Length: 465
Ligand SMILES: Cc1ncc(COP(=O)(O)O)c(C=O)c1O
Image (tube, rainbow, N blue to C red; front, side, top):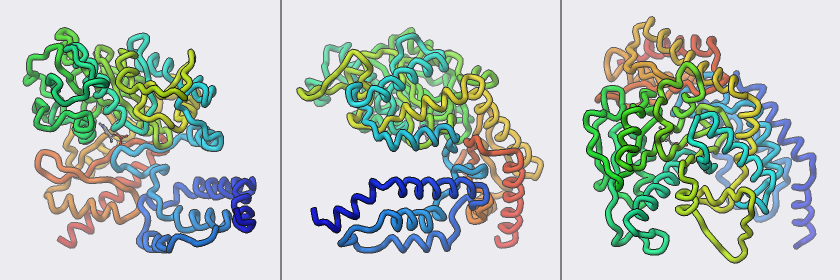
């Protein structure tokens, strides 16, 4: 290597750049509350500075970090602040973020125990704690993946392979072409990621038996088709628009009785199980066979931290297993058995830190607080003559103005205001404003301030349409 380049690269080992990065990070965190919920136009324009040719020579590390801080930080969405209500994007609790910082420096590969004993140990502990927290059957396996999309894919693969195995078909050997068909039953209220996961698993949209959703987006149990032991039934804890939960008590019981495989997509809603006030929403979920969830939503871990839980450990490991002469499996936990990936970052570190930091009571409080703030938001908006369209059971609120056009314009102005940020959606044929209260940092004051931003936006919108 040329000496000039070697000198530059050496600087990446210099601890001062980590201190600089930490300084920038602390500065970012200190200004979190003052940051607009969405970057202003000038911050977005400044991003053009990144449009440069690939540098021919190395760039000094401190200049790189400075550029990220000066131009990158102002162009972030303030999801760590208290007034970001878009999608279902949770905040990041400080203990999780700090543990993640340390884990990033460790840079462990969580594929095998032999690659990282600490990652393997904490995955094992997280698995035990999650099974306990969610009151799942003893022996349930957990895999840590990027998010619920991948978790649902993992559950679908385990289910598909297990159902086909019952028919004497080994997918890993014979593939899917020519395999006997399996049935998949899914409600119209399911999240888009489920259809995608099924397609990746080789189950096309036209092969899915769709069941209508009720007025809250729940699986309408009146239309449950007869199930059998060749069926994958996919249910939902927390509809992305309304927050509604399927009736697990009857649906999971029906699946169990028929020998069908039930999977629950609980991206943000599975955490309702861990809160005394909301756990009734999840009654019967322990009867399912697999569950997907995100720690980066309701639990407020940093991105990306998804979880697949599977009652039949062997089914998950068989669907996702891989072998190779150089792979050294152990008697300890080898995380790659439970995930589609081999190399993975050690997500268990922040997950463990969060569960230890919050404890049962802290998780209970966190979930209850999100629900309380959502209720406050809905009540505050209803008192200001906005229409609330869903039954408030969890942390999602659907809002509309008096006309579709007013709703659309109001949402545009809310998004442009920087005061708070909400996404849009369509509900029963009309445009709506979606509020997802998903951050630990949201205070009663944030809700009040955001409700005022709604009113100001609606006033302006009324004056221009
Ligand atoms: C119900 C539901 N399922 C699945 C997903 C997808 O999760 P992820 O983006 O972590 O893959 C979401 C995202 O909001 C969701 O709300």
